Length: 177
Image (tube, rainbow, N blue to C red; front, side, top):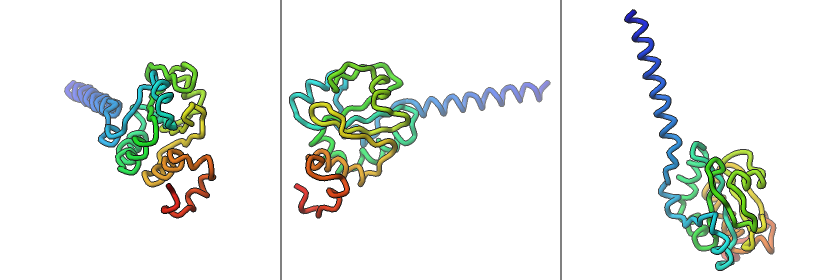
C-alpha cells in the first residue's frame, strides 16, 4: 500500500513539474531586445504606414517557439538591428495562435489567415513589405543578428530597388548611403 501511494504521489509530482515547465515556456514574456523595438499594432498599422512611407517588417511568432525566443533575445537585442528597425521600418509582430486582426496589407485578415496567406509553416518567420504593403519577401527561421542587420539595411535603405541582395553585400560599406 505505501509503495502504491508513493508511486501515485511521484507521478503527480512529475506531472506538476511538467505542467509548470510548460507554463513557464508559454508566458509570452517580452525580452529586453524586443522592448527596445517600436512595435505597431497590426490592427491600426495602415494609418502609420500611410503617414510614414517606411517599409514594413512583420515578425510572425508564437509564445512556445524556441527560435522565436532566441531571435527576440539575440537578434532584436543587437543595437544595429534595433537602430535599423526603429529608424527605417514600421514593425509589426503577430502570433497566429492568438486572436487579432491585421489591416496593413490593404485587407483585413485574422493573424492566422495572414500567416496562411503568407505560407508560414514554421516559426519564426520574417517578412518585408514595401511602404504600400506589397510583399518583398520572407525568411523562415532564426536569423543571426549580423545577417538581419544587413537585410534590414538592404531593405530599409531602398537598396532592393537597385541591387540584388548579393550585389548589395559586395558593396564596400562606405558606398552604402
